[in-house]
Length: 253
Image (tube, rainbow, N blue to C red; front, side, top):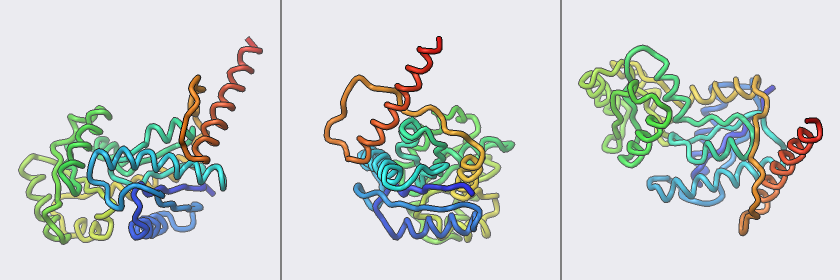
């Protein structure tokens, strides 16, 4: 059974409870689930500053779990924006799946183009940067915010009309705060809606079952200052392991 570490990059335990319920609803007892909440940062991430702090908090959360408990088979980054995803993958050497990347890649693999939606204009801007970084700009017809809407039916109507206007074949609606109303949006939308959160959950479990650990962080000639005990311990552990592996390779050349 795969052991899945789920990290909520914000500090809201209420959001973590929603994420935990969603993960368990999606995969049931097919994986061992451990949900953790960031120790510091913001209960709602809405600025680039907040994203940067969340990325650091995510590294700390993963390090604390790995050092104090055990190494999971995969990590699910439970934020539609994936703060710290690449750094987390580098640090741990584990499969790391983010809500945003998983949902966007799944949509891009389908015929036609996709409308992406979330709450907050800044998140739309950052998702646009992620789309560009993933090399799927030609598959994304537009990115819109639904922050001016509160109920599922209104969101579904707005997004369906927008999708029709820009010629999108489907909609990806993401954001941990939208998890509760997504079923209503999916049920009432005239345009197919993909749930990036469930897509990411399934992908994380699949990768946890099948993927071996990748290369972890490279040895650094510099010594970090002021980091948490757990993060320093994990950095030392991973770089030491990498150094030993390198030395073994040199001896066997």
